[in-house]
Length: 168
Image (tube, rainbow, N blue to C red; front, side):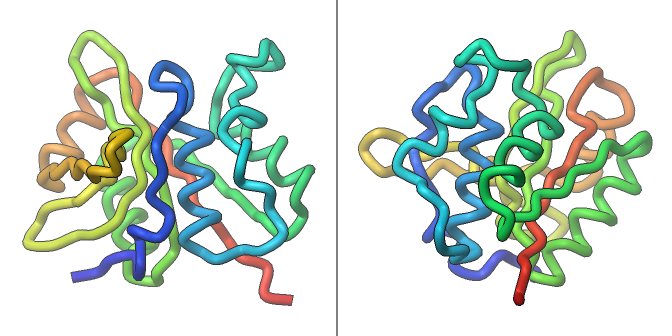
Protein backbone atom coordinates (compact mmCIF):
# COMPACT_ATOMS: atom_id res chain seq x y z
CA UNK A 1 0.00 0.00 0.00
CA UNK A 2 2.03 2.94 -1.25
CA UNK A 3 1.59 6.20 0.62
CA UNK A 4 3.25 9.52 1.37
CA UNK A 5 5.06 9.26 4.68
CA UNK A 6 3.87 11.73 7.32
CA UNK A 7 1.38 13.29 4.89
CA UNK A 8 -0.53 14.77 7.86
CA UNK A 9 2.49 17.00 8.58
CA UNK A 10 1.68 19.07 5.50
CA UNK A 11 -2.09 19.27 5.91
CA UNK A 12 -3.25 22.89 6.12
CA UNK A 13 -6.52 24.78 5.80
CA UNK A 14 -7.19 26.07 2.29
CA UNK A 15 -7.82 29.75 3.00
CA UNK A 16 -9.39 30.62 -0.38
CA UNK A 17 -12.02 27.97 -1.04
CA UNK A 18 -12.83 29.27 -4.51
CA UNK A 19 -9.38 29.68 -6.08
CA UNK A 20 -6.81 28.36 -3.61
CA UNK A 21 -6.52 24.62 -4.26
CA UNK A 22 -3.31 24.82 -6.32
CA UNK A 23 -1.34 27.05 -3.92
CA UNK A 24 -2.61 24.98 -0.99
CA UNK A 25 -1.57 21.76 -2.72
CA UNK A 26 1.87 23.16 -3.51
CA UNK A 27 2.22 24.28 0.11
CA UNK A 28 1.33 20.74 1.23
CA UNK A 29 4.01 19.23 -1.02
CA UNK A 30 6.65 21.61 0.36
CA UNK A 31 5.63 21.04 4.00
CA UNK A 32 5.47 17.24 3.74
CA UNK A 33 8.87 17.17 2.02
CA UNK A 34 10.50 19.23 4.75
CA UNK A 35 12.06 21.71 2.33
CA UNK A 36 13.58 24.56 4.30
CA UNK A 37 13.88 28.20 3.44
CA UNK A 38 10.34 28.66 2.08
CA UNK A 39 8.17 31.30 3.72
CA UNK A 40 4.91 29.41 4.29
CA UNK A 41 2.94 31.82 6.50
CA UNK A 42 1.46 33.66 3.49
CA UNK A 43 2.30 31.12 0.78
CA UNK A 44 -1.31 30.56 -0.27
CA UNK A 45 -2.02 34.26 -0.62
CA UNK A 46 1.23 35.06 -2.44
CA UNK A 47 0.82 32.29 -5.01
CA UNK A 48 -2.92 32.69 -5.55
CA UNK A 49 -2.09 34.58 -8.73
CA UNK A 50 -5.67 34.75 -9.95
CA UNK A 51 -7.00 36.31 -6.73
CA UNK A 52 -4.15 38.84 -6.94
CA UNK A 53 -5.02 39.68 -10.55
CA UNK A 54 -1.58 38.58 -11.82
CA UNK A 55 -2.48 35.52 -13.93
CA UNK A 56 -4.96 32.65 -14.01
CA UNK A 57 -4.25 29.97 -11.43
CA UNK A 58 -2.77 26.98 -13.23
CA UNK A 59 -0.11 24.43 -12.42
CA UNK A 60 2.13 26.13 -14.98
CA UNK A 61 1.74 29.72 -13.77
CA UNK A 62 2.01 28.97 -10.06
CA UNK A 63 4.88 26.47 -10.46
CA UNK A 64 6.89 29.05 -12.41
CA UNK A 65 6.30 31.71 -9.74
CA UNK A 66 7.26 29.36 -6.88
CA UNK A 67 10.28 27.96 -8.73
CA UNK A 68 11.49 31.49 -9.47
CA UNK A 69 11.28 32.57 -5.82
CA UNK A 70 12.63 29.33 -4.37
CA UNK A 71 15.27 27.63 -6.55
CA UNK A 72 15.38 24.68 -4.12
CA UNK A 73 11.75 23.87 -4.97
CA UNK A 74 11.20 22.01 -8.24
CA UNK A 75 7.52 21.61 -9.04
CA UNK A 76 6.84 19.62 -12.18
CA UNK A 77 3.47 19.08 -13.85
CA UNK A 78 1.96 17.12 -16.69
CA UNK A 79 -1.40 16.81 -18.43
CA UNK A 80 -2.59 13.35 -19.40
CA UNK A 81 -4.74 12.33 -22.34
CA UNK A 82 -5.69 8.89 -21.01
CA UNK A 83 -6.85 8.09 -17.49
CA UNK A 84 -4.98 4.77 -17.31
CA UNK A 85 -1.71 6.57 -17.99
CA UNK A 86 -2.51 9.17 -15.32
CA UNK A 87 -3.28 6.46 -12.74
CA UNK A 88 -0.07 4.54 -13.53
CA UNK A 89 1.94 7.76 -13.20
CA UNK A 90 0.36 8.65 -9.85
CA UNK A 91 0.98 5.14 -8.53
CA UNK A 92 4.63 5.40 -9.53
CA UNK A 93 4.94 8.72 -7.67
CA UNK A 94 3.36 7.17 -4.57
CA UNK A 95 5.61 4.10 -4.72
CA UNK A 96 8.63 6.42 -4.80
CA UNK A 97 7.31 8.57 -1.93
CA UNK A 98 7.04 11.61 -4.20
CA UNK A 99 4.45 14.17 -3.06
CA UNK A 100 1.90 14.96 -5.75
CA UNK A 101 -1.42 16.63 -6.31
CA UNK A 102 -3.98 15.74 -8.94
CA UNK A 103 -6.84 17.44 -10.64
CA UNK A 104 -10.04 15.39 -10.29
CA UNK A 105 -13.04 16.01 -12.54
CA UNK A 106 -16.14 16.53 -10.38
CA UNK A 107 -19.01 16.46 -12.85
CA UNK A 108 -19.84 15.52 -16.44
CA UNK A 109 -20.78 19.20 -16.82
CA UNK A 110 -17.28 20.36 -15.83
CA UNK A 111 -15.46 21.49 -12.74
CA UNK A 112 -12.62 19.91 -10.86
CA UNK A 113 -10.83 19.96 -7.53
CA UNK A 114 -7.09 19.69 -6.94
CA UNK A 115 -6.07 17.49 -4.03
CA UNK A 116 -2.93 15.88 -2.59
CA UNK A 117 -2.56 12.16 -3.26
CA UNK A 118 -1.76 10.50 0.06
CA UNK A 119 -2.30 6.75 -0.30
CA UNK A 120 -3.41 3.87 -2.51
CA UNK A 121 -4.92 0.81 -0.85
CA UNK A 122 -7.10 -2.00 -2.15
CA UNK A 123 -7.68 -0.24 -5.48
CA UNK A 124 -8.70 3.04 -3.82
CA UNK A 125 -6.88 6.36 -3.99
CA UNK A 126 -7.03 8.42 -0.80
CA UNK A 127 -6.90 12.15 -1.50
CA UNK A 128 -6.66 14.98 1.01
CA UNK A 129 -9.93 16.76 0.27
CA UNK A 130 -9.61 19.48 2.91
CA UNK A 131 -8.77 20.46 6.44
CA UNK A 132 -11.55 22.32 8.25
CA UNK A 133 -11.00 25.40 10.40
CA UNK A 134 -11.39 23.06 13.40
CA UNK A 135 -8.47 20.97 12.13
CA UNK A 136 -10.58 18.02 10.98
CA UNK A 137 -9.05 16.25 7.98
CA UNK A 138 -11.47 15.13 5.26
CA UNK A 139 -10.31 12.36 2.94
CA UNK A 140 -11.78 11.73 -0.51
CA UNK A 141 -11.63 8.07 -1.50
CA UNK A 142 -11.97 7.20 -5.17
CA UNK A 143 -11.65 3.86 -6.89
CA UNK A 144 -8.91 3.83 -9.53
CA UNK A 145 -11.40 2.76 -12.20
CA UNK A 146 -13.71 5.64 -11.28
CA UNK A 147 -10.76 8.03 -11.53
CA UNK A 148 -9.96 6.63 -14.99
CA UNK A 149 -13.62 6.90 -16.07
CA UNK A 150 -13.92 10.51 -14.92
CA UNK A 151 -10.65 11.39 -16.60
CA UNK A 152 -11.67 9.83 -19.91
CA UNK A 153 -15.35 10.87 -19.97
CA UNK A 154 -15.64 14.17 -18.12
CA UNK A 155 -14.09 17.54 -18.97
CA UNK A 156 -11.14 18.82 -16.93
CA UNK A 157 -9.18 16.98 -14.30
CA UNK A 158 -6.27 16.01 -16.57
CA UNK A 159 -3.27 17.31 -14.62
CA UNK A 160 -0.83 16.03 -12.04
CA UNK A 161 1.86 18.09 -10.30
CA UNK A 162 4.67 16.68 -8.21
CA UNK A 163 7.67 17.87 -6.25
CA UNK A 164 11.23 16.99 -7.11
CA UNK A 165 13.67 17.85 -4.35
CA UNK A 166 17.12 19.27 -5.00
CA UNK A 167 19.36 17.19 -2.72
CA UNK A 168 22.49 19.30 -3.24
